Length: 192
Image (cartoon, rainbow, N blue to C red):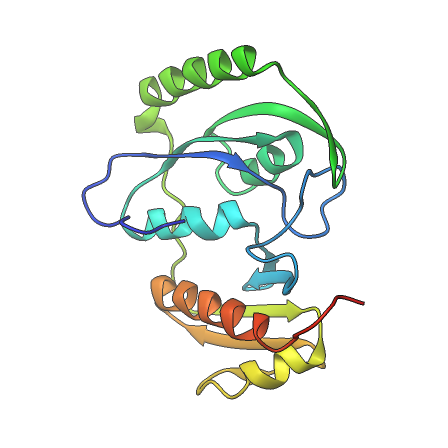
């Protein structure tokens, strides 16, 4: 989701996001892969897909100026960057059910939100992680942690938890993506 993001971007708009895995009243709650990641934390603080990606943008000095999705996802993102422009386009009822705005109303709200975001851009800071970063990932199955700990510098921290530390966020993020991919290959066959 961050492919192509790098130096020189003035702002990012994240549209169509979901709440993190386990979030109540979030439609299709997940953190990157709903079959793999139960929770991801940086320095002990739970992360969402939005916050993980916003920190990639922040690494390059780019603020996430507009963030849209269901009410739960927008609320979570405001915990990381309070002044960003949040646009709620649906209210989650359960993981697979929502009260959505009519598409024409949602599009109008997104256009209005985008305009406000650009007008207020100088007051929306990028999400930047500084200093030592400790990534912990809780996986759904112990076998996933088994294969992830084969990666050099990844530590087994619990039956289903692995961790990695660095002072470079982009390195942490890329390692998170690798963990997600590798862990996803560990369980083959039907879900139980």
